[in-house]
Image (tube, rainbow over the protein chains, first blue to last red):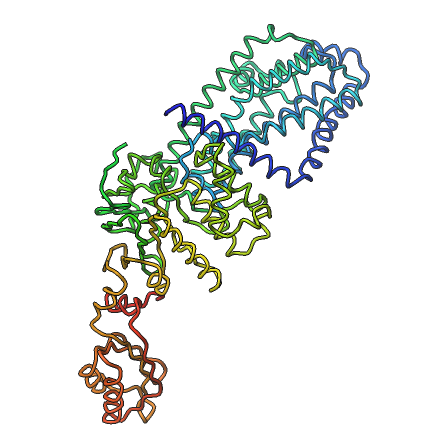
Length: 281
Length: 343
């Protein structure tokens, strides 16, 4: 690929992001909807925790020993915010491509000379907006309602963690997008993976309570690192240097998953070009 | 890239596309069972040679293989066999370069983003077509003007009429400033005024020196627009020439449609048809509730019609309706396939 072509693809990537943002802007009520859930869902778990443990110092100590923090609300809010963002990434690109397929615009996209990576990863860019929105709401709720002190430096470190997690999560999302294009339907698989993540990635509990084999599964899943690292920087005041090994694993998983997604998407495109499924729905 | 310096915009040799019917189940795949699905041949060895600057039409009924052919040329489908070159480039090996130099309208207005304005749609696709950022604004203004949408550029597409959306799809195809345009049934679903408007735009594209390859099942459209036409049926080219030459092939200058009934109410017998055959060529006949509808190709309707009335009288039949029309491509299609285009 020539440098000119590469630059043109980078420009197209920006255009894809702008297009997604413009479409998102046409549905402002979506943002209102997502004002509610990032608060309501973890709040239910906070009340559940209080219901089980009450004001028992022993219970709090046991939690702190396992979770590395005494901030129960912060622990749950961060876990669920990450979960909701990941859910959107899993659904987002596949749904976006499927919508293009049903609408008939997918063929129009494939008739352009742009790199397939732009078509695959372009729709994911809008998910960054959701990440900022979701984590912003969570940070505001934790600070205003639960009195959790989130320093600016910690928030910036959390942004770095989110940035490092992006390739791994986008890789997962792009893999799902390939499955959607290939089979047209992916909800059963997404639900299965969401279930897996709920059980093993420690959305609402510290993963040390899992059996040994469960912890092994957890350590193979990128969201485990994202959630764990976010809690460490925001609730335990950890610096990025302490997180380096974990961030390195997250980055490596990102490279692996993005590579797999590209291979899967190429195979899917080949299949579609042979069978004519780009326009099928 | 393997460009060739000949004067052809599109060149296809033995282009063939087969599809499998149905799907293989996951179990069949896991068991590595042989693929026993029935195969359907949508395009069956098509040869085409479209000169630069031509408006070339592919005319045929629904299911004849027109769209599949266009999708192969547009690099959306891989041929099962045969080869094709677009602007001298191989559609499989040089697919990306083909896409860079060609515009295509293979879908209707649904393929636009309705929640974006026309300009926003075009900005997105301009980037995907690698239009340099510095040129983008002018290019978009030019294509909007070309399809007469410049005054509605900042309206949301959801507020457009069907015809306007189709014109916007054409504007999108013009973004790469293509030497070749593929238009698949571009006027389907449009009202007569919008269809006429779109055909005017297509003529202007040819005046700008572009090549247009279009498919249609509207014979009038093919007749009015195209320099040459390939008539396709069941995935094969059954005739290829200029509209006038194709019409000459049926050896008649006029077509006479007759509706005949026997005086006792029964359909007329074979003797009547035999008499008609001596005066003209019976191209099509159809029984319709006690009457017989016959289409005859005649050298001169002025001579044939009185002969037809004589034949009817002699066989005890009555001609209820006579219509004389010039030869159309529909008649050519019927003479080649025995079926009407819309059957």
